[in-house]
Amino acid sequence: MLYDAAIIGSGPAGVSAALNLRIHDKRFIWIGKKTLSDKLSRAERVSNYPGFTDVPGAELNAAFLRQVQAMGIEITEAMVNSIMPMGDRYALMAGPDFYEARTLILTTGVNQSGGLEGEADYVGRGISYCATCDGGLYRGRTVAVLCGNARFEHEAAFLAGLAGKLYFFPYYKNPGVAGENVIAPASRPVAVEGDARVTGLRLNTGESLPVDGVFCLRDAIALNTLLPGLATEDGHIVVDRAMATNLPGVFAAGDCTGRPYQYAKAVGEGNVAAHSVIDYLG
Ligand SMILES: Cc1cc2nc3c(=O)[nH]c(=O)nc-3n(C[C@H](O)[C@H](O)[C@H](O)COP(=O)(O)OP(=O)(O)OC[C@H]3O[C@@H](n4cnc5c(N)ncnc54)[C@H](O)[C@@H]3O)c2cc1C
Image (cartoon, rainbow, N blue to C red):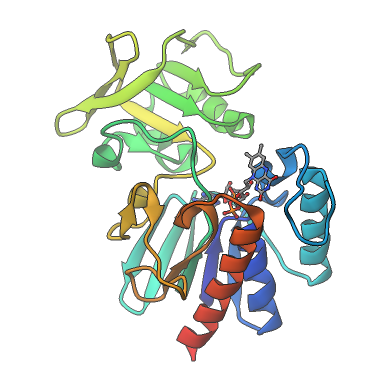
């Protein structure tokens, strides 16, 4: 199916965009998390969001979720790994699934854990964001998994079942991936090393760790690797007042467009982006 729009990301910016597209009867797919945003649900207390006084983030998240459900809006639980322009539409890969949309609203937030030096240069040449899609290429080989969130552990476990050796780098407490072929180094990767393909990781100890592939399982993917040609500045998407990016039919909202990183800004920009999509579709 060709959608009118695809919203990528389910934080406050994505919520606001989705509500407005639904009210205007647009056919859209919304890819993110069914539980919306970890950043919102983890905030201890929010004091600067109109209508709520000192509300725990989890409560605000639950209020957003109730509204989304009351309007019958579906969230497709997945990570978009790559987006390709295809003439009058965009093709999105989310794990093994493929979607097409005439317009995009990027509401991916900011990835505070950041990418590795050299990571963008090796996408498709040893750097992967999807265990299901690329795991089979590394059967019996040595891979590293950079796991940003415990919810990706099933993907790491799947890779451990395929790989000869797996170096596991969790970026959270109490990780739960183990196995005879799983090694959890005490050091941290800082850069990708390679020639035509990835050959290893440089660690913060200065050592090189030889690997055949690196799986980066994070809550967000670096913007310049997600959508080639998207203009960014200082790690944020460049937008105008209509939240339009440099690419036709592509709009962005929320933290991914720049500071201040605030709920009210994200919601406002999501609203503007949705209305820009509606205008663009005509
Ligand atoms: C602890 C904490 C407390 C905070 N307190 C406050 C506060 O009191 N007041 C305030 O105004 N702000 C606060 N903030 C900031 C606020 O959380 C952010 O400004 C806000 O969440 C931004 O919303 P967003 O929709 O742009 O992005 P996010 O909320 O970050 O949501 C982005 C979503 O997109 C998803 N995503 C990313 N990439 C992809 C992809 N490729 N495919 C599919 N999904 C993807 C992510 O998983 C995430 O669910 C706080 C932040 C933190 C961390």
